[in-house]
Amino acid sequence: MIALVYTPHGDDVLLVASQGGAEAHPLWYHNLKAQPRIDIEVEGVKRTMLAREAGADEHARLWPVVNSNYPAFASYQTKTTRRLPIFVCSPAWAAPAQ
Image (tube, rainbow, N blue to C red; front, top):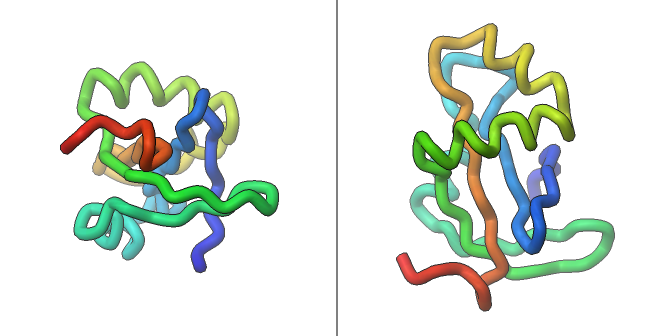
């Protein structure tokens, strides 16, 4: 189990692969890319979700959303040249086919 800062967004959960602004993605980034079906527990409620990395346009729309939830993300972004990825985790029953 990995505890992460998350941002609720409708039925979705947003995760930022920030690793505090390190130059490399966190290990869980690679795990989600390889296996997008995950279980998330929020406030004691477990849900099966499908994670996908937000594309450039969606990232631009979601970046202010995740920053309003956790302002440190903006600081982390200044520490690295990589764009901090945002994963959109949707309930498995509602996620579009990939």
